[in-house]
Image (cartoon, rainbow, N blue to C red; front, side, top):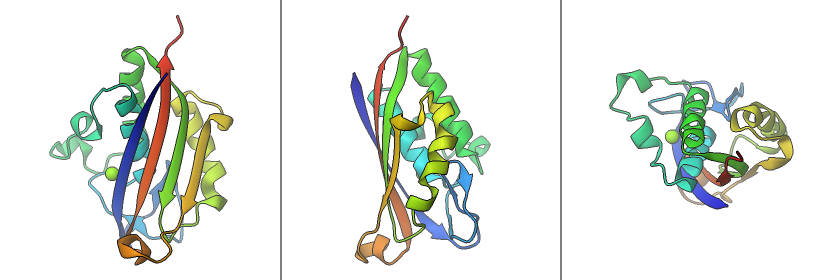
Amino acid sequence: MRVGIGYDSHRFDDGRPLILGGLEHPGEPGLAGHSDGDAICHAIIDAILGAGALGDIGTLFPDTDPANEGADSIDMLVEAMRVLRTAGYRVVNVDVTVIGERPRIAPISAAIVDRLAPILGLVQRDISIKGKTNEGMGWIGRAEGLAVLAVAGIDDEPG
Ligand code: MG
């Protein structure tokens, strides 16, 4: 059993749709970024790559590569899973905390779990998506953006 941690943060951009956890959430400010800005997917990618000591999202998808411009972060997660499986690992569980004043995570967490489970090779009970505000403090409290922490457990692929 190995454990990895991932962190990501993105600035809000009202001109973009909010893509978080592989789903679009209408009526919420989007996230700026080279890709679609999906900070949940990015933090999970770093957690699973970190668990395997397989580098990070920046080495797998350099933002200097025009191919990654506007990238669908679900595709990036699929590729990170391929790298993990090639190294002989499977994901055991993922736990995510989104830190931000918005969106509210509780109403959308189950849908995000359903979206990510098949990609991670997990069932619903092995994925946790939860939210915290920052109690109005600092850049997160001023709703300039949001941050995501993710922890992933991985294990040797059986067989
Ligand atoms: Mg990111």
